Image 1 (tube, helix red, strand yellow):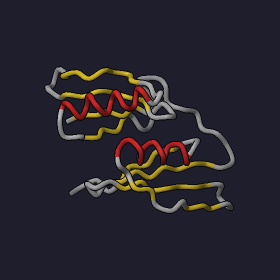
Image 2 (cartoon, helix red, strand yellow):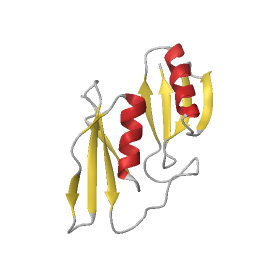
Image 3 (cartoon, rainbow, N blue to C red):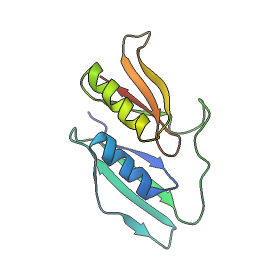
Image 4 (cartoon, one colour):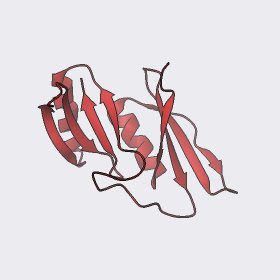
Length: 128
């Protein structure tokens, strides 16, 4: 069994699509639009076979994540292969002006990771 995709409600579909393509080598599919339902979505696919479905309501803004605990999506983790790549990508994202919530470190359960926030405040772990 494998995860096919995860879905994230977003407010800025284009910015979020660009973020996951730029920093995690995703490939964006076509944007699906349903004006009758006020809905748009875009799948971003990755070499592993997994994808993210970014979804947006066109008729209203949604509250963004910000607290450490909230209902719904908690975090997404990308495995990048080595501690050096965790460090390198974290600095690239920091230098691009995005928030690094947790610098690279080895966690208590033995994972080497950093924690960043995507453009809408969702937590993304970068790990080996």
